[in-house]
Image (cartoon, rainbow, N blue to C red; front, side, top):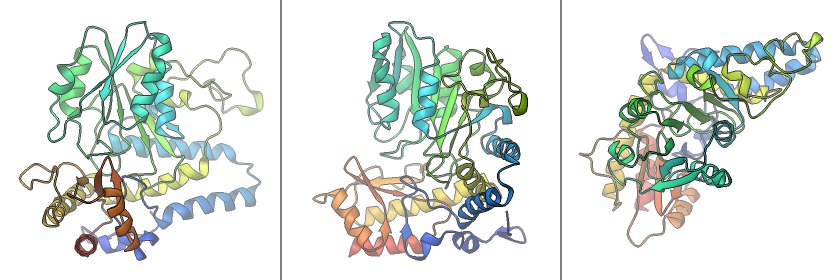
Length: 387
């Protein structure tokens, strides 16, 4: 970090908000669509381009060294090891890398939910040419019981694809109960953590997914095009790369004497990445990641969920209906509600004209609360809804 966000042992949340220029003009309650980037992320990109001009890019290997530092920071965020982390341009790409590396047999089955993010339906459905069956289960509307998935497993179920937090209703998947049981039964698990990484605690030791994909432009507060995936040693033992490039050989850093012939793959997740990476985007993601780590996973989750609870009460008072019961546990930073006789998309547009950024999804107004938000934002939302 280039500054301190702490006064003694306490976080200065006003200093955190000052890092986000968009908050000067907007009530940003839409991180589940696009998270705002802190000024430090833009600064990191500019510094990279300035360095290229000054050095003629002669030290480009140091950029790859810096990527390894970023891998270590991501590993710290999710409780993994540096070698388990690779970079991807988006979650859909990484999901395809995984799906096309599985040795599918005709009759194998993939399970997901009917209201999953389209990535998690489109990609499995495209495997029908290999005889793979895709089955979408009716998704829960209130509480997500792991038995919904476990009871649906069949003898040919090979893979479950699920989001850690559902994009359209905010329901949080019970991964701590689901993941270990799927592993015990020999069923693969691929998790999309795009709607959770950066705001909710996620520990891959407690939720042993076979593959985790995250696009960093939402809760990781980075630019689009910067994402990461988690591939543990158990997965790397059998998953072959779908993309092969000059970096596929273990000794690719010796670029003045590149290896020729069949590559000898390194035992690390980076073997799936392909060639040169989007350095400027990943350096921006690092700056946002530094901010998240500085604030702390526990503090971010606690603050975001506290604001989400208050948001539910506001939507209830304004006539919203849905999963808004204040007595129901609030474990997601995404709050959704419908309003009788009002079109959610039209309501979103009216709020936008009042500089309140929210979203409409599946007929619901969707409000997403992050750690840079505060009670003033919620009061402006309440006033705009009342108006």
